[in-house]
Image 1: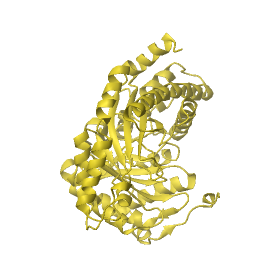
Image 2: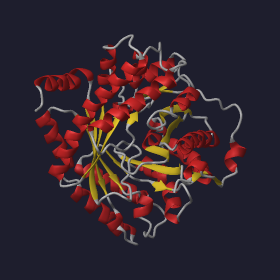
Image 3: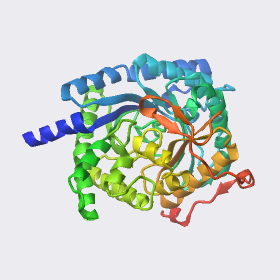
Image 4: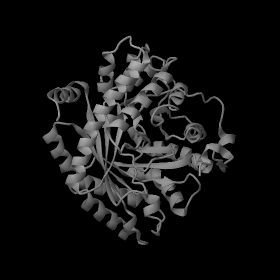
Length: 453
């Protein structure tokens, strides 16, 4: 039996504290679309996506109306295109990106992810072609997202890929400079990328997944902050317990939506990703949760410890609520998407260096942060390498979504709107060069902890 108090509490979470299901993401395998003719391959993937996801958006809207639970986005993730298109004879994968964009728009989703490559241990010819196609692909499309996994705990870090991604990000920024380098907001560089992640821009349909699957990402920073307002002055054991109980309730909402969508769409239920994903709206901020723990502002000493507690307690609460918690699950810290993070950058409390330290304990990494347009490709590659090292050594997912905005300098701000928010341009410690380090190439070997079999 569901008690009336539980119903009232959940309703208040939604109406007052911004609880939402951030996304229903349908994963679709494109393995069976393979064809040596690029035109036929594109037709195959268009047909499969539009057939598989024909009712995704309408089903999400029906569930939203029936249960009163906001479902912000409906998304699709596909098999990494570098794998699915490996047999195609072509000199560019831009037409594939354009086909994904067309198919996604046809079924009405907000984003489609999977213009991706997995190169942690080396490149195939299609990996190289996909990476080379990325800048033009993101400039030519609206809703296509992509990622490159350049490292893992098992394989180490592919430093040749790290060098290339610095150059790709710079080129993407240049090609979309008239839109404040928006193309870079659609590109994530991973270490230890999960194959069941429903969150963009890094979502792709892992090769170990079923032909079609439903994953749900749920979010509720405002709910957690409100819960902590009720335990002011309590010790950290009470804080952790409060976050766990709240995360449990949030995850149950996500599981309800995931199972209902799975049943109606005839696709297996994959995972619930409980990630405290902020939005630019006041009252929906991870930074404000950390401040509720007692920090005067996010970024000052104590911030990393507070975030570690939050991330761990969120995961523990989620695991108790569902047997299928996956994806990235934890607390996101995307600068442009969190009004508290933006405020902390503006008042000088939060630097890129502190942000990097926080990524050692958050659920992902350096996310949606903008830097001066003069930032070199080598500096961007250095940032990627540092973040990948944190992920590799700690056996966790880390990622970089950096936006070098042409014509902008530290202290400026760029507006993206929607969930992407507004990004203050952050200063970098780049007076000296990382060029010689990045130019070495090769592979940083896997750590000792990789030898677990």
